[in-house]
Length: 243
Image (cartoon, rainbow, N blue to C red):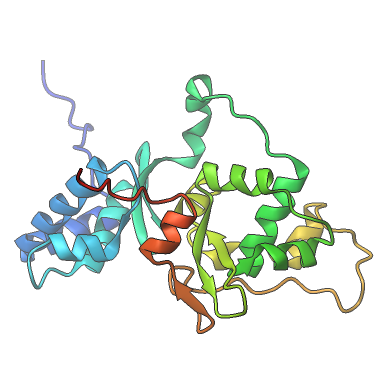
């Protein structure tokens, strides 16, 4: 019996061929990809790009390694995704239904919590008093505590104003949970209206603020939280004194 001459070996795609060619020309790229893959895979949280740069050998082109690794995974069951300036492996969006059976049932946020989260996301850095002014109602401390417990909201610093109120902003976990690469991916006014989240008959002067580009960087009117601040806020346990 003769072999079927019509059978042809699996052909790599053009993109895979280009990647393989680059790896042959630069074995350092292949090794860099392997190291990046190992670090990101082992981390339970998105890994900042600067951490990758610190752990990889000097002279490694981290951006190129990430780009190539992202391309390798783009058609697999898990994808390498960018979350702000960090990277993580996540289930491919078209396969997320497979995870529903194992998903933990979580309590839905109240309307007040959702409104507060939206105010913080679009207006950060923002103080509690500013949140109340924007919403037009008093803010419940319990509602703010819930958002802090979810990890979606964090304390940023203190405003350089009398009383030095704490400023709040969203976290990397917020972007990761809602599938956002960066804050600028938040929906604009037209998208909010299209989704039915805003009335089509809004005041003529109504506008949605442009989210900040770098939420990790303090603004000119913010001071960083000190250890004393963290102790006062209950975020840092003071060391016990020796007897």
